[in-house]
Amino acid sequence: MSTADLSAQNLSAQKLTAGKEVPVSSEPIIEIQNLNKWYGQHHVLKDVNMQVLPGQKVVVVGPSGSGKSTLIRCINRLEEFQQGDIVVNGHRLTEARNLPLVRREVGMVFQSFNLFPHMSVLENVTLAPRKLRGLSEADARARAAALLERVGIAEQAAKFPGQLSGGQQQRVAIARALAMQPQVMLFDEPTSALDPEVVGEVLDVMRGLAQEGMTMIVVTHEMGFAREVADRVVFMDRGELLEDLPPAEFFGAPRLERTQNFLSRVLNH
Amino acid sequence: MDFQLIVDSLPFLLKGAVLTIQVTVIALVAGIVLGTLLALARLSPIKPLSWLATAYIELIRGTPLLVQIFLIYFGLPQVTGINLDPFPAGVLAFSLNSAAYVAEIMRSGIQGVPRGQTEASLSLGFSPRDTMRYIVLPQAFRRVLPPLVNESLNLLKNTSLLSSIALVELTRAGQIVAARSYKPFEMYLGIALVYLAMTMVLSFLSSRVEKRWGAGERR
Ligand SMILES: Nc1ncnc2c1ncn2[C@@H]1O[C@H](COP(=O)(O)OP(=O)(O)OP(=O)(O)O)[C@@H](O)[C@H]1O
Ligand SMILES: [Mg+2]
Image (tube, rainbow over all chains, first blue to last red; front, side, top):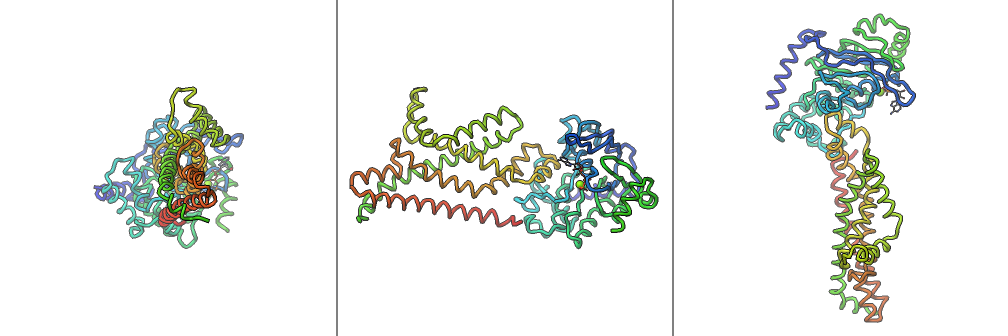
């Protein structure tokens, strides 16, 4: 069943993104309103507003400590926030009973992979669909096999995470998140912990996902990826969301001086 | 030196050793189950539960095991009217005692599992409870295996304290033979060797388990 599922998903996804920058539906799948967060006295998210339409790819950039991770971790409520509202796919995050629902529909990929070291690659990818989506062992395996194939590590299914390279681990982590068939994928610097020579293989998987129409929010320092894949680039600095522009404008004609300074720093190093 | 004595009394000693093993195994299993629950209680966000668990753990760890044994064997009948035979009394005392020590071992094991593991699990949609069950506890158990083995070795050796409530475990069996034969040196040396044999088997088994668990997940 699951392979059929997947290709069905791919088909509709392709319809969604026949061109590149064209989300069809106009209802935002993620809506962030006046989000404020403090760590003690430290105001780390200041009145952040953002909407993401289905199929959009948003790349979040900004200096270290600007609140990028905190922002995307609020979207699946790995971080609490004190003020504001986030609505994901119609579910209000501030209502506690929506939380598991939202988390099932929002996949997350971490900088440090966070694969489960006590489980094989296959188990990593099948656990959540079996326990949370009620898939049979066989269906979960078939779905996992298709996903591992897609991220290019089908032969490693029986291995344990500790036996894989960083790039391979990150691709398994992507497969693990996709196995829940999420509506949205969040990436928090997915390539920052990788050796330079394997960054490309992870970005390739993400590019493929983008082409299939997945809604993605990606925190990254890979400006090439942002330029090429993003529909919008969002710039954060000191807890504020300062720019939200198409990549051509963001890189070509940033409006604020803070953005210009940031860009000249990251693009020239 | 008369080692014939040990050989002759071996069947009697081995019967004692069997009791020693029984107390150890039952108390260890109970201790691991109770200790894990205690560790979860202590780490629970529900404050009264956490305080209660902490109080229990401190109480047990702050008092001598022998006093705990006496409290259960001699004290319990006085206040409850329930008379326990030496064997159940001993098992009870050791279970309650090892639970406290295992709880602290488990707590550090649970806290040693990186935060990212919990986050990954929650982000997939697992509840905190399932996260504990499928992700954190299995990793915690692997981490605590060495200190847990240490605790079981202590447990095994400490069961000799039960000789003081007339349970004929290995030490008591040795005392009886020694008293009868006037050959305490050979006798206690013999007993020491039997304990050593048991602890060595335990260490060997645990190193096998550790190897097998470690095989798949080299980091
Ligand atoms: N658990 C925490 N407790 C207190 N302060 C925190 C905590 N986590 C993050 N912060 C602070 O919140 C701010 C935003 O952090 P965040 O991790 O979101 O930044 P970032 O943009 O992702 O940075 P980086 O590029 O380094 O990952 C920083 O000033 C950081 O020091
Ligand atoms: Mg970050």
